[in-house]
Amino acid sequence: MPTDLHEIVYLDNHATTRVDPRVVEAMLPYFDTKYGNPHSVHETGREAREAVDWARNEIAQAIGASEGEIFFTSGATESNNLALRGVAEHERRRGNHLVSVTTEHKAVLDPLAQLQRRGYEVSLLGVEQQGGRRAGWLSPERVAEAIRDDTCLVSVMLANNEIGIVQPIAEIAATCKSRGVLLHCDATQGVGKLPVDVSVMGIDLMSFSAHKMYGPKGIGALYVRRRDPIVRLEPQIVGGGQQKGLRSGTLNVPGIVGFATALRLCLEERPRESRRLAELRNSLAAELMSRIAEAHVCGPALESVDDCGQPLRLPGNLNLSFGNVDGEALLLAMGNLAVSSGAACSSTETDPSHVLLALGLSVDAARSSLRFGLGRFNDAEDIEFAANRVAEAVAVLRQCAG
Image (cartoon, rainbow, N blue to C red; front, side):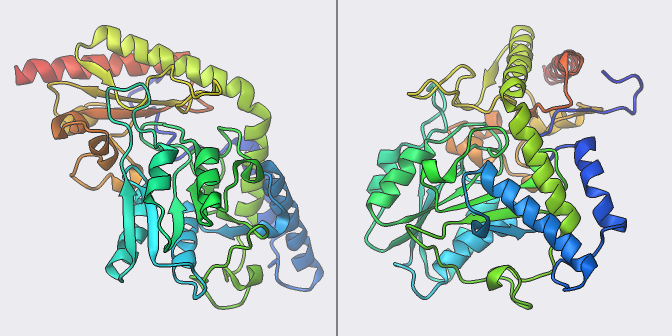
């Protein structure tokens, strides 16, 4: 809880996370004493290259991949672009049709729109609507119906950054494989928070990023399947031929080491951390909904589970809409409580969340929503502070509007 007016209670961990001090400690030597270019042949370069090889192996093992299937990028946005455009622009692609979802992140939707302007066909699938226990969920049958003979790629997010819905990726992957179509998964919000094994799940390409899991910004990865089938991509960044020519550029050694360290810590702590975050999230939701009339959960019910009994929502995710409140005014009234009204990449836009609109919410309801992203460094005092701050702000704004 803040001790002065300038201390922030940070509940926006879907936008980015604080770098864990243990990650910083692992990175520091590669800024000063082990600063070599990993592509150099001298001893300093070999030292850096060994660190990259270690990190690539750590990350590969964490997601059930092999070392040769991990390609480092600047983050998930670049990984998404490389996957989507890389498949679509490769001369040996199956066709010009791509399938995705209306609730995807803009880092998927915008590259698809660009491809569409260049003559490719894109089908965006709808999801279960608000009011159901699985709001935001994508049916694998809907994917099967959308696949055509000329479909070259399906792209479905593992866990949504606004409403936390976890999609049935393994079932969707099986559908794609039975039709001979590649599946890309933006797993940025899921890796480190959910069990992820690309081999078991049947994913062909997967994007993820360090800064969503208490690692540094500016480093991400793309998993690219190298067998059954071999996935072929057209490079998007050329010049130097690093990483088998698929993504040229000098590797960010400190970031890569931090990435691997952050992911290892997430895996070690995930079982207890998931339980802890779900309890805090549920406590915040209960407190807000008991104190604020017309407060509604956006997305799947907090207690919803899939057919295997696994939660259908990220444990640290909460999205609430508040009736009769101006959303922009509500966000401005938060003061030193850091939350958001949608994806961080869209924070400068005045339009309501495209994710909430895709669920069937009205424009007013979408505008009056807040997204809470709980993380490793939050505790019960933060939840108490957030509940008080939001309840007080809503009460004041409603009184002014009334």
